[in-house]
Length: 456
Image (cartoon, rainbow, N blue to C red; front, side):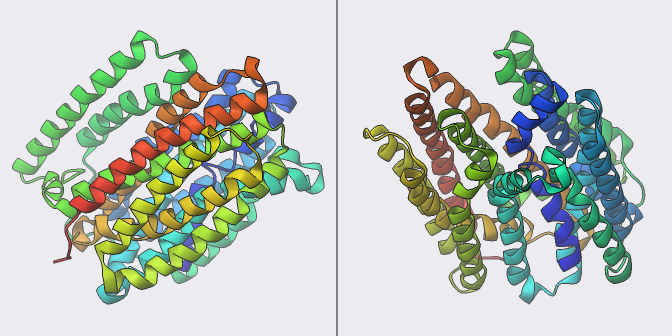
């Protein structure tokens, strides 16, 4: 489990670490704003599209085999990213890197269910929650430190080179220590289901990624509407496969379990907060306060440490107090965003010392909520269905990230008016983004109270 969690950490970190590298990439490669956006979006898009397919491939062909394949693809594409001579090459390599991540990450959730005795899963999910949360919270901190250190004169390329030794070590250790396993009932991949789901996810995720940058033209709304129809087609395809006694990509009966269906939406909401809010903070610090990537990264350090501590607290207290830990976490998280907005709107100019305490308050709630939420989604899933369920969970994380960046990003840039002074404009925009985050966090709190109180 330790080995595969390293792969999960790398994949999640790479969703965030590139954010602080943007200005340096733009300067060295001459990337346009649109190309720079696709350095981020290309990874997110392929990651989101292939997650369920990656989980299902592992059910059929073996979880260790698909995990090691994904690790190899991720590592080799990281080399391509680090050596990229132009924006087009970097974007293409990032798309391949996202594909490798989609093959790695679902296997982590699946292997917990398959390898860990039920009585110990709370503890292991607690560790996984810490790993994923720390990757999300510390991504920009690590990116800032690497770029600031300028290792061997590599500059921004260090954020990709760092993956290579870790990826090689993970690959070797996985081949030696991770046992092979597969679903006892999976026979072959549901190709029509893969095609239908990929189209549906593309029509949903692509306009969310591109919409804000393009000013939300008519085609983005048309794509989203078509995405709803495509999900309907996917549902019909899966029902047809199951009625014929086939092996569907996704068993729709899973969504009848309240812990799974409500839990998926909860995870989507939580990851909408993580991705978008720290992007808004990074923009505030670098655009508004003119901080370097290194200095901006240091602002995240207290929040990252707080998140780590309270994630461990959650892992130890959930077995005893159950859903009440998530309830407390969701309320504190929402209060943290609201407090940030109130502080910034009350008059003082934004400074790192002003927001660090409220960021730490958010991390208290996030640590108590994010860590156990992963266990909630998969708590009742049978081993033969864990691949598809794990893929759905990982997809919810990535779709949530795209939704959050679209919503909170739109709020931030709509409220950012540099003509009033960059510091004042950034503080006001970040306050508005905090209000948007509070609304999403409040929705997450409602979802927590809809979860089943007990397992079984």
